[in-house]
Length: 202
Image 1: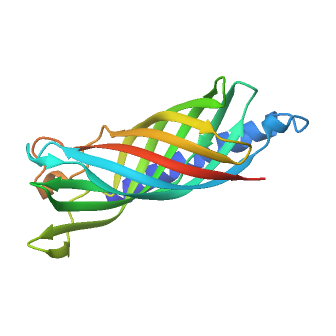
Image 2: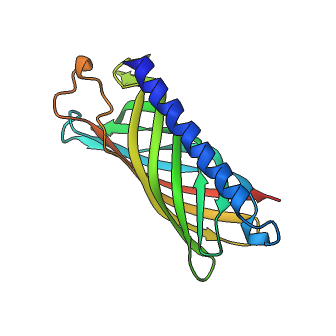
């Protein structure tokens, strides 16, 4: 199953990359708004899990760090990928219960708006990198999550100037994140809210 999931993820990444480079070939090199662009970003996560975790689960605060690769297709529309390392999880009864580390790869359609705003939405693939659980002040590794999970990302970007920008993102995993053989009976998903600051490299 893990091998099949990895093959699906690689296929999605290859198709996404092909789409990005195809769009880059089509756009005009004469317009400064139509250049292939790269940025680095980092920010804060607020996440919670829903399902088998019960009613006492609350939001966990952690970090994200990643990049933005953007291909504008015209003055009003663009496509961008936002690969990032994202740490998320939940708290139960006020104490840290679980913390997951993902390689998160959203591929978003972007619509430019007025007053330096843009709006983005699209699917994402998350690859599980690490799983930890805290019990009685002891931090231990666990093995409950699926290797590959799917979700959707939406949000907005504000450009402070030609280089600095801020992002707001809402992420929802619509596939179960915990394997059935690891005790997932209700279906467990994640809600993730992100605030990030980034810098475009000329």
